[in-house]
Length: 136
Image 1 (cartoon, rainbow, N blue to C red):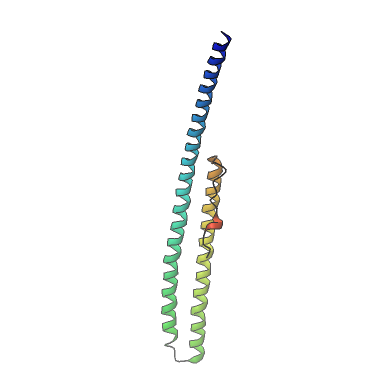
Image 2: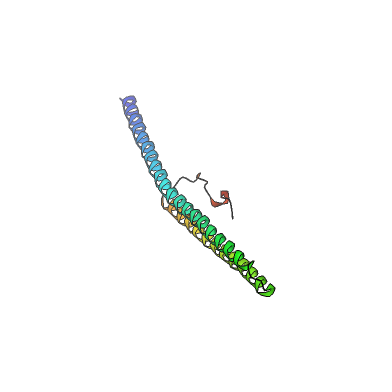
């Protein structure tokens, strides 16, 4: 009789343990799905930021090209040099501003991802960080 009780208790504990493992696996699966959604959001934001950066750099490059063409057509040396200097200044300021805006958007996307990842209660071994990303 005692052996039967031990056998039944062993069976009950093994069932409880199996249920626990199944619930942990289901929870981890839900957490990973949550992180995947956060990842999609992050990557979309960064991808759009890169696309915006490239488009706007092309615009300011074209503006610089046009300004330089006009400047090199000026016959007065002093005015020509001033126009060339201004074309480069405008381009450099525009480029710096675009890169600054891009970095803010990228940082915001990573910050939001990290907050979402924490809220997802993702597994601790996930090691996705912005140190892996190429810098401008």
